[in-house]
Length: 193
Image (cartoon, rainbow, N blue to C red; front, side, top):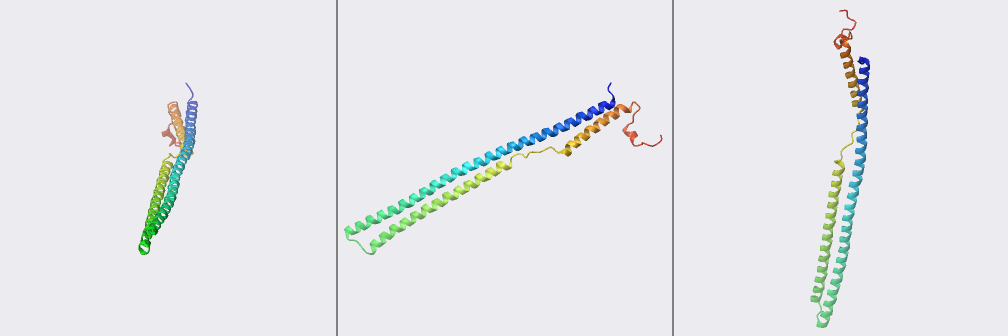
């Protein structure tokens, strides 16, 4: 049979080794989680950038289309005015009625341009709203990542202390019946029985 001191020291060594191995394993897991979080963060931000780039492209296309529509509106109004002036000249029409007709074409051109501008503002507002939604979604993805938990030296120390207490308890149990001391007797050290 092994000596109680050897058994107690072996128990203490095994408990200490287990505590240190658990400490290292938890730190390794924390490092892996931090690395995975870094990858996930970069992917989430890259995804947001791609989505925003797509929205920007759509907004640019809409702005270009609005410029084209406004230019077409100006040209159509100029063509209409030219036809009206030519028709009026052929028919001998002039004066206020002609001015009213030309002013009506100008008003129609202004209303059309206003409608084009309003539509472009609405498209831009929707684009901004979409970007804010993408940003919120990305922030949610980033904030929902698990936080890496490093091992605590205090917890590891407590595990080692527990291993030491367990070893001491085992040692006491083995030596109590062989003339050794017991935990109860420790309170009476120095007292005469």
